Image 1 (cartoon, rainbow, N blue to C red):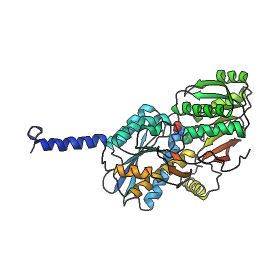
Image 2: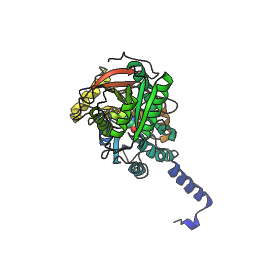
Image 3: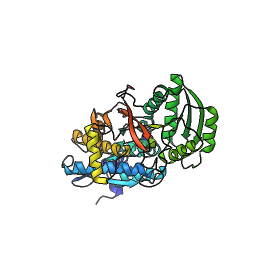
Image 4: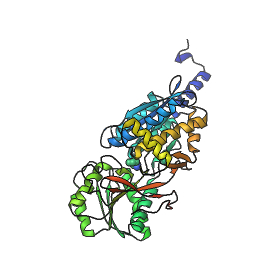
Length: 395
Ligand code: PHE
């Protein structure tokens, strides 16, 4: 037997190359033993934004069950390995490290929250494991490297759309903004909204901030009253938004309150159905969309989970199906080939619209604006990927 001391120079070169392949993931073949392909998923199944993780997980599982029932992909069944990051950035890092380094997954699905996707992405990039975030909209997520993709639109598009909607469709010329400074998502969306709103001729009359976990927003909201805004933009996550809208209405603020996809949760309006009247948010799909892909998905989801799917569930389902579609087009479990196949996704018929991955690994697709009436999310308008109205606004 050879020991480390009697290896030839050529042996050492081979071992070094193998080590480098392990570290940098070049020519990485994937995902698990025998007749399964391992796909990893990191999600906030518990903690501050638990409904995000639970919904996306249910969407992922539904897609995988369907795919496996139809024979799997590349002649193998898919094995979904799930890590709960408890809605914490540090745990997101540990989750992805485990999936990539111990479980040796072929690809990673996740996360929903942009900050956590950005924490996990460098690990996937280093190991050349393709990562697809179903729902992280912050601009910087896919800039982490050429193995990092998203199948949702970006906050640039989302912020521009809501600014145009506020200015043109609602006719609001004065906006106040309340931002969660602890979330990359909220800060990025605030920026995109502000730039477009002022470009259009609107005035941002007051800006206030808070931190995830805060419970009392009355001081910020009271300062808005003096500024007399026509609309208030709150680019936050559902937990805080739920309290912000309640407290705003208690203080007598009746103007429209607008937000982004972070509002979407079955928890958002619970117990505050009336307070949420005259609110609008941009989302990824609407259950009222008559499109057959959407309606079939809703039916399958309800049969399985006895609940109505939210946007994360739809995005999880789409992300998983896009990943598996790319695996079958790659004809291989080689990670570089899989990366190329994901990058060349074109007009994929998703529940959240027709999805094309662009040169920056972002998704070009439509956006849906939701109007909340007595706690029910109604379809208000769909805007195409170039900002064009695909449907008229239903006030
Ligand atoms: N877009 C949000 C983010 O990037 C997450 C989110 C997506 C929330 C979809 C709700 C619905 O952090």
